[in-house]
Length: 437
Picture (cartoon, one colour):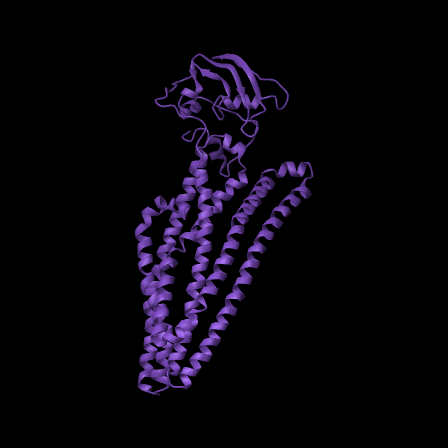
């Protein structure tokens, strides 16, 4: 629940939608109590008395009940869906924006498929938690109204059925606790599937060139097998709990049949009252099941929120200087002074060790060396895709780390050896280096 509190800034703009949806839970809970009352009145006031004059009113009353239910139910659920959709949109946009603002070293250290999973899948799990918020008010009220009506009909019979609640609560809590352990694992397995998909699609040329199709498929099948294994463990727990609940409910129903039947035979209860009690008892089981599902959904949403905000807590490792000077144009020289560098995923292995050279304006320089010697790494340091680990790089006497990052990159043009095309038009791909060209 502590993790879910961090969602409040995203919920705040839609707070009135949420409040309205929650308030509509009250009349909706009252309407959901009506079938039990209606059953009792139908038997005792119509069928037993055989008063045909009441038949039309009963029919109109039944239709009227659901005419009233229509707008209440619609706005109760639709307003909540508005909140879910807008919060999902804001989280995804903010998450994508934040990830793109991070320094490049995060993308070296993190698996791309995992990042895709966190942006694509985790907000959907948060949605399920938000969409269940209305349950917190609606279902307890629904249970309370039904329980009160059952007490009104026969308090002794109600106390008999209450005996089922402790064992039901034990089944719900035990199954929920066990399922929670595997929900986190299931999400992690899903992230690994995303990772395998990303590698399989983006590396398709290498896979085909080196005939790695079988190996790639094997790795993907291992990921899906792990996901299926975890999913089936959750399914097993759920499918054990459901018949256990039905069995316990059967004992309670048997008690109602026996004890309630005695009351009808002895004249202490009318047949309609017993049927109304049956209806109330049956309807009471649904709020209990729903509250158990709510617990699981909120736990899942909390875990997803934690993963999402872990990314929000990441900060770029490229310090932003205050009042940084801006370069109007490159005028004199670029200097590499005792530059040392290692990638974040292998900090113990330095790629560059004590690099020194000066490049003057108007000169051209070629870096020649074997693959892996550090040529691309050296070029990546100039636009500060990474920061040096030792030494410094200067442009016209300014240390790169003291300059405004966007201004620095505006001064640099790059023709990369890696061909990357955005999924857009040819024009857009040509224009991407200067959008207003």
